[in-house]
Length: 85
Image (cartoon, rainbow, N blue to C red):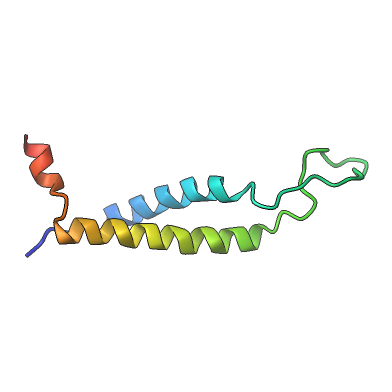
């Protein structure tokens, strides 16, 4: 039977991937307003669309995590052999 990652390791890897991806996705479509309202930061985006960005991040992170899980399960790269050298 091929080795696989445990559930705790899988969750930790997914959370790490999610945070990396969210920082890559946050700048998408973020444009400061032409006219800044009083009390708002001039660099704050006009329409941040955080819900959409969270959804995109979740889907992209799941795809990346699945690819990593497939590599680990297929033993394409033997991490255990690499660690024992």
